[in-house]
Length: 601
Image (cartoon, rainbow, N blue to C red; front, side):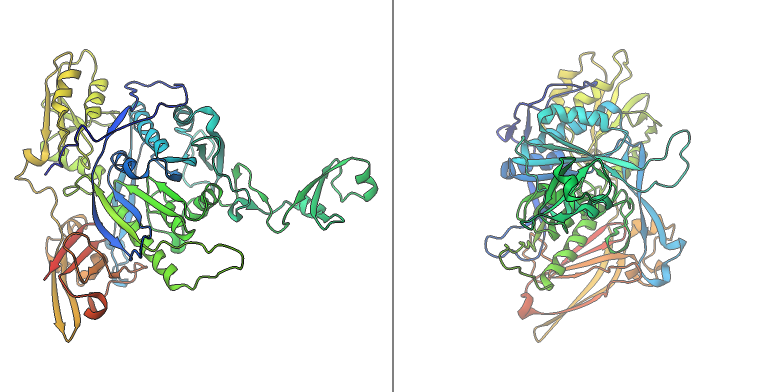
């Protein structure tokens, strides 16, 4: 069912941009205002004590999520780090493995498309432009934005940032030098770096030059020249000679002294970062997520631009690296992703980190404020996402459903149907007036074949917008798939058989069977629950709320195997006096991030 349309009264006005336009593209539209979007609290991990902070994980389109956040967090975010699509023209897939030692073979491995990084240049720029405008609205005056990109879009994105933030707010262009990726390079030099563009909300951005992650060891030459003066202060000399100068040579003024507060701290890192070369993530940090960045890279940015207790946000969260770093460093955080797989991956990662923090004794240093720990986070929806879990696969499903002939390589339209252009609006949100304008912007001016728009609901004034933009009276059909094809089962949800027993205050929950039709289909197995010798091979996690309030899942018991060789337990026992008595809610997530949810009275 489509969500209620936003009311006209719930509009946020957007401040005028400080920079001047330096880049133009087809269909460029300034963002003057945006409606408020409601959010639904789905899950809570950990316990909020008193007026404590609860970090936030949002599943939804980040433009709508940011519009939602404006009501509460406008001008409050200290650092936004984003690793958005690079306009790479590639499909990004995650390798998925079944659990258990008996299935680590080719049969137990498959790939799932997470997202598609294929854009027309104009659409990509408009997409980023609108979102960067809202990010600036959310930043506090001494806050910063760090945008991670590569050679494909860095030159264009920097011009967009100059318009949104103003040229005077530019801080650094950071070059991250990583290992050369494998594969053939053709007639070009191999890629070995990416770029982070750092802009302040104003020129008063926070900059922590003494943060330990921002310091690197002195080079050999400086280490050799380090010495103390008569007051015991450390310094090094620079001049024409490479050897240690004598006192007489220093007195002749051939050398300059640079004082160092702590020789063990090293020197401030430059804007070329070559001391963290690993592009791919290994070990306990590896979440198996495509384009995952290592924590040390984000750790340096968080340390440079924030203090403990500050609010850090990432609107392209992926596997949750930014939130994980913020959680470890005592920063509050907000994470957003439109991919349900990213939400599940990040939630499991953050729940694990929070549990480690609570079980580890805190080391207090005399004279220093203790680093805060925020052990709770909530999971929200903005808009309703009951049909599809990621945009890349859902677009293919809908095109097949309607018999759309795909267009290979077209920068905007998705296919043709009965001789008409077809556009599938991102099915994890409703169709907006901006979508309608973009369609007419990309429609050739002399083309009269017509357009079919497939969407999962639309804003109430979209039909009126069609009349306003359709100056050539082109045949235009708007199909809401949620009402147009109610007879079609878009997704077969998993099924589970769960048994609950209570005796003398002890509760035992047993998962007797779990069945995932989509997983069986992807593995080319028969549609039969008995296709697995052990249902636990298909399960990534089990979460149990022993006293469900009927609205928000609050898992007190979570079973998330840390390695693929392990499987969930399947049998869970607890004391009602410890966790409370009431309806028991259970969420089971399979390795494809499909969910089963049930409540047992």
